[in-house]
Image 1 (cartoon, protein in one colour):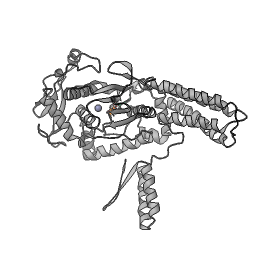
Image 2: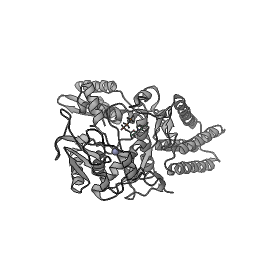
Image 3: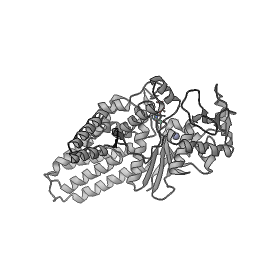
Length: 467
Ligand SMILES: Nc1ncnc2c1ncn2[C@@H]1O[C@H](COP(=O)(O)OP(=O)(O)OP(=O)(O)O)[C@@H](O)[C@H]1O
Ligand SMILES: [Zn+2]
């Protein structure tokens, strides 16, 4: 059976057919890095990582790209408030993002493009739009001419007339039509800026994703994803820019996750009703947060509460306990068990049911229900007088494999080192080298690498970063 994906573009579940057999290109809109992420921001990171993991489990080679918006109004404001450089603030929160999502079991992306490192591609992209008559300069700004793109509104299923009736030109905007949007913004005095054919300025938000997706994944990508609030205007505008410039379809499947709410209101930085992922991870095993997110279908809203999180913890504990009981029982098990075939067949059936749930638009809630059934059966099996090592191992390896698809390790993840711990290890390594204990120095370097921490020895000393 094929994987069916709910496509926001068609409002239907459609069988997934990649552009190139066996390969999937996936672009996920990443964070604007001016603050720590809250658990709402963690939701797209976790659900689309799970989509990726399932595609990989099904044998696809997935190229996953997630961008960082490292210059925009909010970051500039944060930098001014903190009296720091924009780049310093952005780097701090990129590191924090990587640390948080790594702790949450999110696999590393193939590329993490940043706006400030993609200025050439962004300017070229805007130039093509200007040349093709889809964009115009106005007093140092450049705007996309929305009415030049006939299909504008197709993702959010709104007609251009409906959209226009609600739009107003804001003070300071120099555009012809209220629906036009900025591709390039002239710099205000003293603001961070880049040189362009239209003078000093910086890109608008939407254009970065069109330019970076093209650079890393080509004109047409398989899956484009993000939170539901990005559907309009961000993704609508990405489609307009990319299809107008490239003359071909931009993304075949558009996926959007639902919100994490608090008291039925969207968790957001601006409302101040947020729980930082970082704080939650310090108090709870990060696997619980991941498991909690996946216990609801990704398109449904989640109303966050401590009780729900506790419920997820109890559920995960049940699975982990069964796994550990299997481990204990393994030693006293023999190879002689006549019921072996029956259990092996049952386990195969469970895997099939898990796959069916995931094939149905990545229904992790139903997939987790299958994991509970396996757990229940494992407990029943453990009550038999005679248990077979092979059946025990089959139970364990199925649980490992299927939880692995959900990105949940059966063994607690202790590898999210704090900055101070990394620095202490680096000190130890420096000492080891002074002592000519190169074996220890290399071991520390390798251990850190396993934790996604890269060391760089420079004449000024050892620098480190999260990979
Ligand atoms: N409450 C939420 N539930 C689920 N996803 C969310 C929530 N808030 C933001 N997202 C998603 O998080 C990702 C990161 O977005 P970004 O850093 O731009 O956050 P944001 O939208 O500015 O957050 P906020 O709304 O808190 O200001 C986006 O895909 C966005 O759709
Ligand atoms: Zn985007």
